[in-house]
Length: 247
Length: 267
Image (cartoon, rainbow over the protein chains, first blue to last red):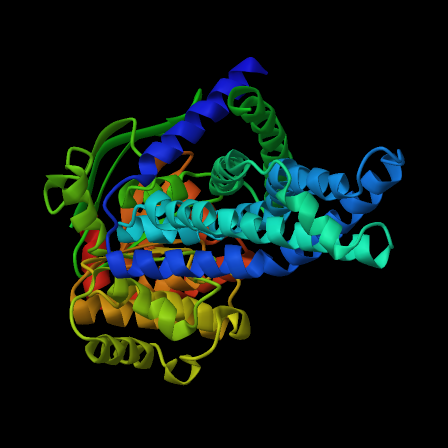
């Protein structure tokens, strides 16, 4: 078990090292990078919009349900919603979902390319496939996922406001007042820092699993599942480590 | 010309190629034949550099591929075209984009020149009309032809084909064989084909290497096969009664030719 861990970890590091060579053709690299930006960024926008709206709404309702004391002002609900969404829900929950959406796509795309010898075809042409196929994915994820998380944060907070208004829990003014109470800009930095780390994990771990698939369709499925599971566990682990170190 | 000098390759304890030497000649269709598990795919993967040999040398025009620097290897690889068993076309690209890919990556010239070259190659494989289609929309035989067009678009010096006829009907198989043979002669390239197909062996095999359990069992041309006394080769090539009858008929035909009578007397 331990040896398998070290084997995978070593191969993962070698894969990362192998990516950093001069691209054979900068124009083709840029084209692939832009394609990945669209796939990862625009392709995941729909699901991010939906989960962030509901995430904000549910958070408001549940906090209001627990804060029934008459001595706590209603605006405190908005303050808690804000911090919960910025610190945890927008970066972590969104990235867990993206690990499923983007991670499985990356692992199955690369796995299929490996099994159908498309990667071999590029290798024979003299292309560094790690640099051409994996690096643009990681770069696109590291750029697009923080953008998605920023959108998720805004929409989550907005969804919380709407849920509060529609549920008759707190007025718009109370909500905005709560949002401004004890605001710390460091929380935004923390959320963005987490999103960069998670984005790297979301793109690199599934790339590793997809790139090293051996076998057929069954193995592609297994690699996809393993990639998503390992990515989710790593996100949660890093979430804990970063919270312990930076908060 | 590609020379394999005492190459050895294994995976863990399992030795796939214990010691193989062979020469793949320029301007000829060189075939590697053998039953499944005989090591021919491993041999081809070693030749194109997808696998490293454990010992021995692979020489491209006299230069050791294994000893080359990365940049030199890249240059050699850009002179290699390969047709894969499953065609290995890029699913997200059209036929035209697939053939254009090596040109975009390594080719020089304007977009118009590149497009003209792509169309020239597609015309060569009679697929000009399918340029805008995706791989999922074309047949297996067409995919193979697109694979050939992609392999020749950079004017390679070496063409490798891994089971080019697998999964194809006999007529399409013959068409692919004919195309590969024509391209070999037209561009004077070194073609290496890994095949099970007996039609390919008999029609295109200018130079044949028969592999048996990882070793080179027999070497010769398609004409030599008819009179070969190698038992293992005969069992492999003429496996059915029908093929054995066909062999005898061909022997009779060839025996009537004076050249062959003289050759047999010499042997």
